[in-house]
Image (tube, rainbow, N blue to C red; front, side, top):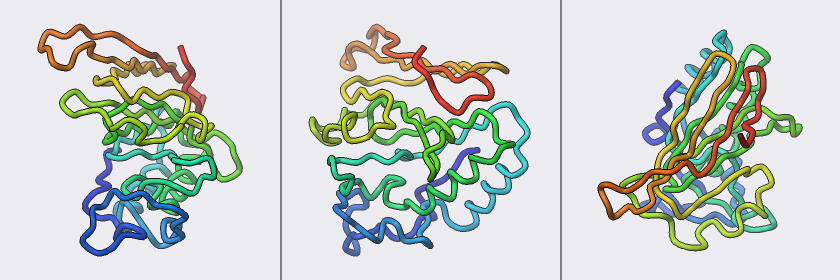
Length: 213
């Protein structure tokens, strides 16, 4: 399933009208508004119906922005508005849909933050629901130093993060195993730059966790 999380979303939480969408939120209660949606109600229903009828061995959901919580501070109060953190209730609804027993091998594929991430996605009771793979970019600059704070310390569900290298993710999907190779170019200034695999994660069929391979 390929989503559009840009055109149909509710107004950004805790942001003045006309301001840039991606602002840092600090204790923003509006980010948890139950009626807020990053997908729009029609697209939410469409995806929920697809998940309810899912029978395939893998469930891949491609979409634009960081899905997992990304706390920027140790208290878990600071996040970014442009990501699913700004629409937490919509994320909870989607996680419930992916947690259905008929949904197999769920993986969310994300981008937008110009860096590599691999995240665990857990449900409200802490059970594993899915994995998330976030790809870096080839033609965009890396994020400024310190943009995400001490992400690995503040977010126990983040399995891997590289915010400096540019590249892409190559995913091989077989019936019994999904393997994701995080591929980085060694020098983004050179058209003939070498490419190297900096990390590999895999999920076996029937699992809901991406494991370092």
